[in-house]
Each structure stands twice: as C-alpha cells, then as structure tokens.
Length: 136
Image 1 (cartoon, rainbow, N blue to C red):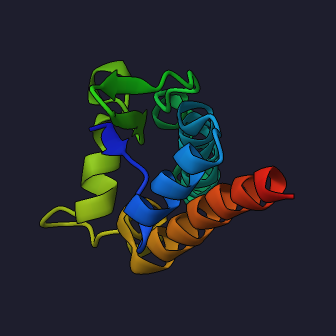
Image 2: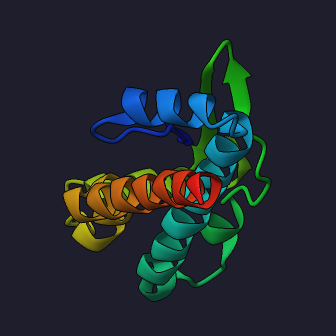
Image 3: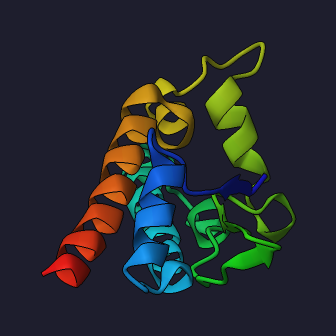
C-alpha cells in the first residue's frame, strides 16, 4: 500500500521559477525534499506501530530505499507499507475490521492533516533555504 509523495505547497510554481532564475539545481532540491519527506513519515509510522509490533514484519515492509521517480518534470517517492512485502496488516490496523477499531494514530501518521502540514512546511522551508543560499 505504498503511497506516492510529491512536493506540493502554496506558491510552488513561483519558487521553481525563482530557483531557475538563480540557476539553482531544482532537481537536487526536489529530491532532497522528497527523501526528507519519506524519512519524516516513516519515523511517524514506526512510532505509531510500536504498540502493534509483535513480529516486526509490518515495520520491516517500510521501504528504506530513497529512489525518487521522475516522470517528465514531476517527481515522486514511495512512502508507507508495501503490502506484498509484509505490510498487509497495516491496512487492517489503519482502517479497522468488524472486530477491531482503527488505529487513528497510525492512519494519521501517513494521511493525517497534521503530518501533511508538517511535510508542506518542511518542503517549503527547504526550497526557500536554497533560494536564500543562492541569493546571498
């Protein structure tokens, strides 16, 4: 159930235009932002999984490879549990079953508004830091 993460924040197009004008390496900054996004979400997921961690198989299904995929000028990175690598229980934990309530903390660690806002802020800060560095 790995999810794709991308770089999104308000004013993104203007920031990219500014980086291009300053001859900055947009690809490098984007990849750095995506890798940090993945690390941030995976730490949240590992923390939320602590109470469910009997065999550690589900946590082991978190892909630690930081391969950024580019399709044209759009970049993304896989985050979350890989169902085919032992992450199937994460679905039942996040969404619940008829006999088990969902784990809101686990769900929120990847889909929650708070985490999405943290990611947007982190990504935005990385891009603006690069602009400040290049602008002197």
